[in-house]
Image 1 (cartoon, rainbow, N blue to C red):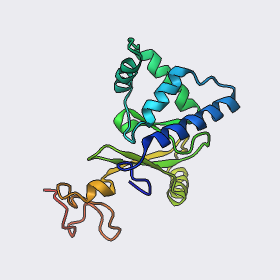
Image 2: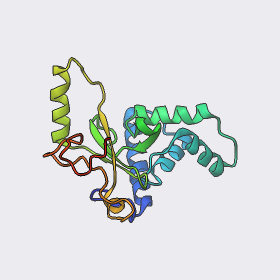
Image 3: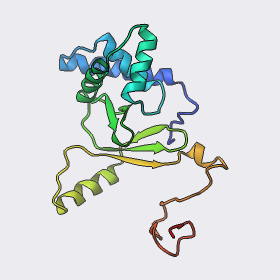
Image 4: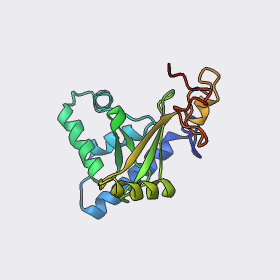
Length: 185
């Protein structure tokens, strides 16, 4: 997806970069990045697929060879969230590494429904539009991370996924009778 194809790059580079940034951010904040927290962050960054707490717990148990209690995982996740090192993917009840750690920011998560990969964007035009429209609706956001599901470029190109139900045409709303791909009956 995007400029970095998660299907074809070295995830170890992502892990190394994330760990180095995390160590720096935690050192600046005077926070302790324990071995357990590092392991959780490393597992989250091992792919570009959002990872839930219980699968994460299972992977930690495999690594350590010891049982890991759910509160241990949730405490590590809360620490990583509090320091801006990961994002919660609410629609999947999962977590993904933050590509802009240590910087408070709004953004967008593109989530491929076919392969499960996710990519973080920080599109200034979208962020500005959201900030402008919310107050006029009487809502004041504290945190904005827009989750967008669809198909990444690699999955979209596969014949089994075709061009079904795209909503990227500004000319026709998705529920327009003129749309050929509208299957509402």
